[in-house]
Length: 283
Image 1 (tube, rainbow, N blue to C red):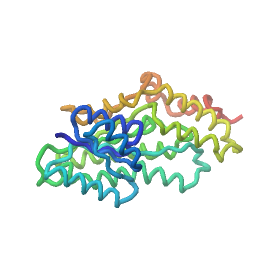
Image 2: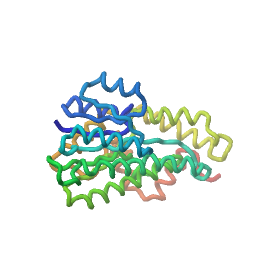
Image 3: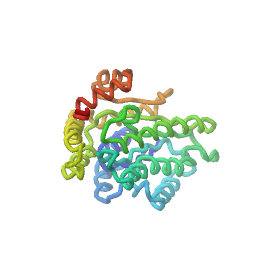
């Protein structure tokens, strides 16, 4: 039986991906932090094995890797999906360094720590039997197109794009592949949480108060109209199973206007479009 470890599997993309792989007959090690989420996943499919996993805490990483190792019986893990992440909206001119660092601790350093811990199971330990596994990092459209007020989030996703490329090139000697999946707007709780947090924003009385509100309203609506998380789950499955997978996948709604064209525009032009849209132009 093929097997995969997925972080951030309690809700949204992570949960949909866990359920999708389990339905395909994979054993899924689903990283969660709450027991109620663990129970819900098991009820969805008995082939899902919840593991307590906080990517910022080494003891949970060690325990999860130890459990998986004991069940692989000397074989390789087929894949790891780094999905755990946080996103808080703020103007980076005022955002606390503590909050900014928290994004890197979860979205980047946590993903790096989990990847390093699981590499022997993926096949860097050449004594293991079976095909080498693959790494899939869930980044974002924001990993290549930076949005205002999501500077910390986008910075982590830019970092993960680079780390994925580095891992892919360095791990070729072991046959371990590394692939990026960078979704656009997806109907997930992460943006509901960001929207709720923005209702009590400490930035309301700053020059960015109104632009931030406009951006938050627009972004939350984009999430409401975004892709179903199952679409991303299908993309992750392709990344882990295709004979010749792409190095990067971009499941993005309205792809021509929200992804292809903006990447072709000069940056200064894109600056002006965003500034006009959110009221960021100087009077």
